[in-house]
Image (tube, rainbow over all chains, first blue to last red; front, top):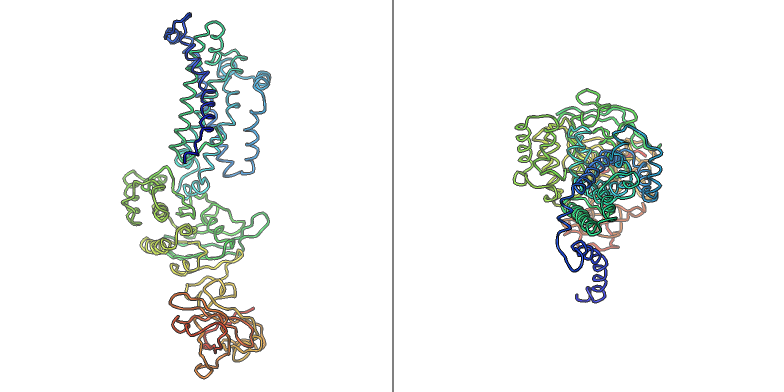
Length: 258
Length: 352
């Protein structure tokens, strides 16, 4: 039994741990540095009291909610219909869902600004970011949903529901969605991790999201940027833990989305 | 409770005909099984009744009303599926309450109905358990209660026992029959298991390659199969091709006694159908009360209280099976010479 976790494995684990944790620990230490050999929490106090930090954080969180809502509203019906009524279209959706991986963000944003025109409440505000965010999170949200649905016997469940007198709408609301809770939660949390860290679109389109704010701060106040980066990490990690936790509790798995 | 009528149902998938000319009536409160090998179209027929598939032609009528164009949720059919179909996010009680809830019944009514049905299937103590906390048999009982909770005009059972182990299957089928009698619900039961169909049905409809081959009460189906397919499919027996003569059927050089052959023009090609329980064996021709046919024991299969003895009939060159009490079969060994005989009224003559 001892051989299963030998010295080699331990070394690999330590090396990997150091690779991931060392930069974070050093960032943490750096964020406490006040010059010379002074280390304290003053930077954090300054960051917490800067209004722009909260404005940018709230903007990123709002964009996360809007993106997650848009993804779910568009994707849930699409995935259900494709699984039940048009399984042949599944391949098409698969391709569409992988496309964001092969189109570089910079090309996407250039294309978007040329093609997308519309009402000022969309184009003139940060809401505009929801469009590219929906596209870049698509591979993750689609995969999460698809796996969630595949783990259910969707056909039998919907037929059972209909034979009991439920309409299509009632079936989706009372039977399908509650059983996809874990997948929906997973999709939403993955959206959070991606949107919180997204820089290219926001920076080019001149919106001050949390990631852009951190980068801007880094130009002048480098210890503050380190503190904010650490904070951003914590949010993302909390979301990842949420994904793991919702997987463990729900009946559905999120294998492909990680 | 309702009268269900299927008339002229035709259905094809991708150019292949899966159902043709299905006409069948179900009396009020009747329990009818659709029995046949896999791929015979029985589940497709059930799904057409439920509304999950549309027939290319023909109609489904409930109490004289054509429901062919209605969506499944408007047909008032309760259905129990082969796969466990309970809603995983709901307890047993909530599953059973789902139908009345969708029908817009009052909360009191929903709860009363669910409690009543759970009691009927004997699962009151498990009402707050989720599907994954219930055994397969319990899950199917909840599914049955759930289907009955909507007071369906017709109850549709799509191989509900096939995923269960043998013992639970027998218990549950008896329970299904008891509950069906108590509620008086017209029931269509799909199965490929003939024992299941024969033991619980008022009538059995045998299907093969998309057509109905015979619809009859179980005893008639067993004793008087309409054709060679039904004869082979229901129970055990030998179907032997030969030519009719006044005293029986000539198979090879041997004349196999069958009084029914007298009704056929001599020389007509027929099939003689013999069940294992019809055949008696004697160690010499003299003990046989009718003319014994010399035969050799091919092999013996011990089946508990009886032993199935396969015999090769001299002259006919065919093998038939005879069921003997195991005590009697003990003295036989493969290769032993015996005389086989049967009451000439027992074999059935099937047209070819």
